[in-house]
Image (cartoon, rainbow, N blue to C red; front, side, top):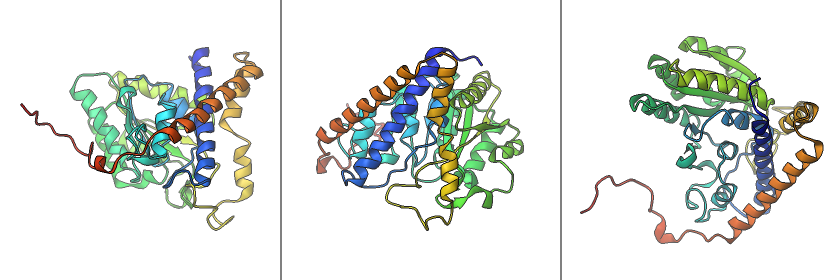
Length: 329
């Protein structure tokens, strides 16, 4: 494993940021402090954090509706992310985007979309731009097992391989598209098996292991940056909570059992990573607890930041909705 201790500690820190952020979002949403959809990333933190740790700030990512974990994993602002969920002007999109639309081009976050699979061609287009401009930045897109069946996903992977683009397709297989098991909609054993149809490597990774995610992504990044083309990575993971807040346990016990949820909770990605750091004497139990406490405080401060940020004015409704390339004299 070629990963330094600072990166290993950064991975823990960012996983705790995502975890505390999502727990707090569930709390304030339940209290009615903001409206709209929100899709918790709890249980999947190792996928985004491990993958993003292998990227540069100048590399791009794009995400989906379960989109809080991705920008935070890339180093995004906790304050701006929380303010956006609250619909406030200090949010990433000035309060107009909500939980499914967080973007920060300065650190390579192209944004997310609630339209299933729609970010896959966006990331592929960014990779095409890298090649056309003669740059060496890599593009990575997160999508779910449900999105893997969308036509846009297949079209993007096919073109990326035909054009030999520096893009990484990362399927976060949390095994259920809302309430539908991927085993009922995918004809192969693993989504990564589909890679052979597009003449690209397909890699199946334990999505609860942040180090495994880092190593797989780093290999794909190196391959893409050296001009060898795209890779399909499947991170096998599990969402501990329901598909979205307010949905409730749909037909409780019908589409997944309490026993299954409990078994996956035993493989909490944060616990797995902390145990690795402690067993390899990279960090002590006290250091790990301190990182958790520090990041929890950061999230609490982000809530205060969001609450104190004003709502956008009605007359600002149509601002920032389109670009005007014509420069006025």
